[in-house]
Image (cartoon, rainbow, N blue to C red; front, side, top):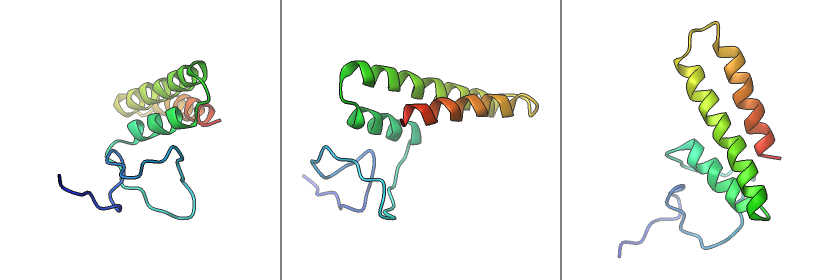
Length: 92
């Protein structure tokens, strides 16, 4: 089996730790920002009910964001607002 270097990030985490450290000016290489935040929500949630609630907020944020990207310019600000609003709530 090929060993993966520690410098490569999500989705190829190589550390077996339940903690997610996003501080200390560390760079995390990710391929899908939404999948990464889904991972963070799952690791930070204390129980299944909280995980489901925060996951649904993150999913709504993702849908609003993708809809905003495909919408006319005049509609984008409101859709981005709802996306970031749901995203910020999902991060507690």
